[in-house]
Image (cartoon, rainbow, N blue to C red; front, side, top):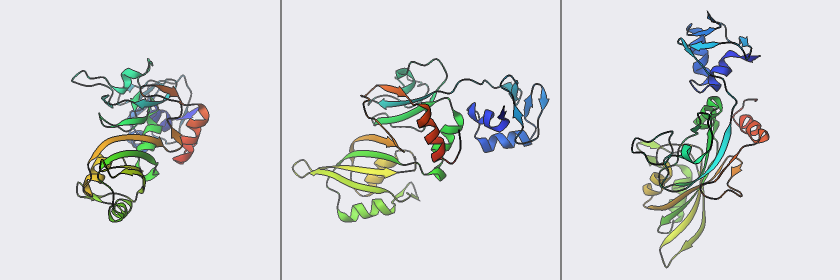
Length: 240
């Protein structure tokens, strides 16, 4: 037996909070009857409808992919370019958690667990994401301080970040910089460096929370184990 709002959230159609609103607004039926009570527990054989649409309950799967350059972070692309979904041999309908730009490489999670995906992406949960950027120019102490404290991009200040210069090359006028953020705004890393006058030449995401790319080459993937999934749920303050 599982709570109704959790099952709805897990199906990927709404967050748990939105699922609660759907129940309270009489939009949810269990075995043909409208259910208005939060916390109602239902069996795995129950037929659940949201807005008269039957929701499917399937085994949850979790993948960690090392995304290559030139791959779209989307479930499909109108220009028929290759997407992250095409790289994973899985018949269930999975989708990426957050996004990486077309030319950005590195770690990305894919799942059919809508609840966990929503929790990981919610800014409130402050999940660390570690990026390695090759940038034009050498970061000054002033640039470093600005990035750490937060910079204005698209009229909104970024949250505090961790910034570390890994190495710099005076001859070619480039730096390798490690940046840790927990937001996921559009083109955020590139825009942050641009705001202090440095163009990003190459970008890779190395870590999400405690997960990294150990032993996974570009274009390869692996399934998360149950312990890792449990740890991710614990990070966002939920049990699994």
